[in-house]
Image (cartoon, rainbow, N blue to C red; front, side, top):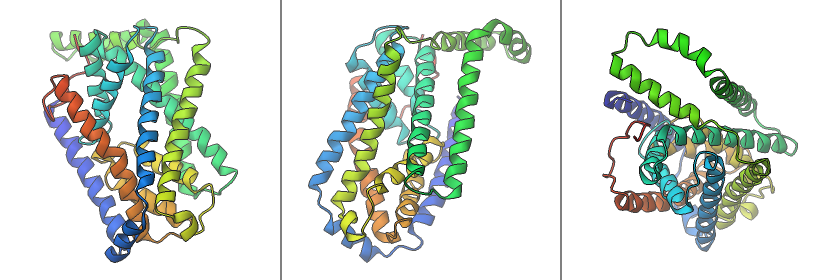
Amino acid sequence: MSFSGNKLKLIIGCLIGAVFLYLSFRNVNFTQMWEAFTRANYWYMLAVLAVMFISHYLRVLRWRVLLDPIKRIDIGSLFSSLIIGYMANAFTPAHLGELLRAYVLGKKRGVSASSALATIVVERILDIFALLGVMVLAIFVYPFPGWVKHAGYIMLIGSLCLFLFLILLKKSYDTIRRPMDFLMRPLPGHLREKVWEILERFVEGIVPLKSRGDYPVVAVLSLLIWVCYGFIFHLTLLAFDFYSFYHLPWMASLILLVITTIGIVVPSSPGYVGTYHYLCQISLALFGVPASPALSYATAVHAISFAPVLIAGLILSYYEGLGFMKSAPGVDSH
């Protein structure tokens, strides 16, 4: 990705965030926001912090299983790469932090960054399928607005298409190579060779799991990751006393999980600023929570989700010898 391309994406992402921030704040009473903050019991946020890092650890365990057919990687290296990538997502739009995550792992453990990126793509597909599974369960207990269902259909179709493309790329690489080689003929020879090298290493990362027993392990880990995410919303609702104050039903955290994650899955603003807050607002509005306290809740959840990861990511990036806010490298590490 060129510097100009990254800059354009950053500008577009910031504009998207600005639009959603305007939507979030347009009907807000700041006195009511402050009252919601002062009523909150922040001891719950310590539990939220613990659950959040447990979810990151479970994600590292799942990533390790996905990488096992390529190379056995230690937990520490995977955790460091994951947190640095998440930290970069706070500054970049469209999940560009995943490129840095793959690069850091390649730099630390001699894995091709392109192959590592392929496992991250598979991981994201698993996340979308898990989200859709949660949505299907939630539909039985709450009637989602039409736009949420439509977004679910789009994500399902997109994920299936991407999954089928990865299978086709792996199974028919030589067949696909011929038309792609024709399309890339205008490129300079050295650049064409570099693209092929990256693509070949990416294809090397699309591999079956090491054993049949790994498939249920991945499924269980995916389930536990999403249970943690839902529990984070639940604990924060308890912290703000929304269950009793607004008589929320038990499934409110489930609905929050589904709707806000749609905004995270779809590439948007750096750190999902604006989009995350607005989706929290409209999710809570379904249960009669006013815009002002809903924005207080969204701000708290967003802060506890990003601030600790941001701090940890900056520390780990310094430890790994990465310059602060260094532009994302290419996906090939060697």
